[in-house]
Image 1 (cartoon, helix red, strand yellow):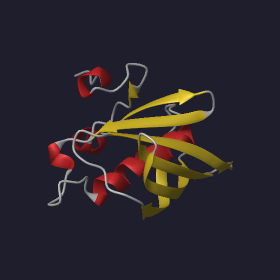
Image 2: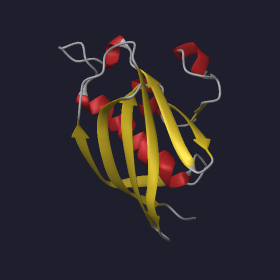
Image 3: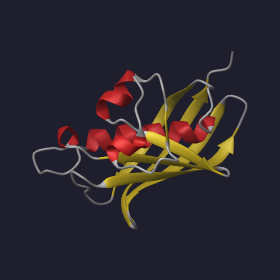
Amino acid sequence: MSIKPEDYEIPSHFRHWVGDKAEDYIGPFFFHIDGKTPHTAFRIQEHNCNAHDSVHGGVLMAFADYTLCIGANMGESESVATVSCSNEFVAPAYRGDLLEGECVVVRKGKSLVFTRCELRVGDKPILNSSGVIKRILG
């Protein structure tokens, strides 16, 4: 089954990462690489919300983790796994919002990648995250 960004009102230049059932169940999440900058997108749906009708914090952290990992492997097929992930919640986001992420690779070593990302709705910051991502080499 092909998951298309347009079906979630996400611009068509975003791509779907194939193969992660959890991300598809929660999201689905999408990404594109602009030069050396990874961008991610996710349309918040009703099943992503908590009792306050805002996106659940666990969903935000899962999307941040996705964004950090896309930064670590730059959207390529290299397998990666999260070693650590720290998050700061800045503001709520709501059903129907387009949540976007942008990742910065702070340092890429032989086996570890240090990354940071910001999730936002438009110009409004929602969550800041940093992580250490393990490159799973052949």
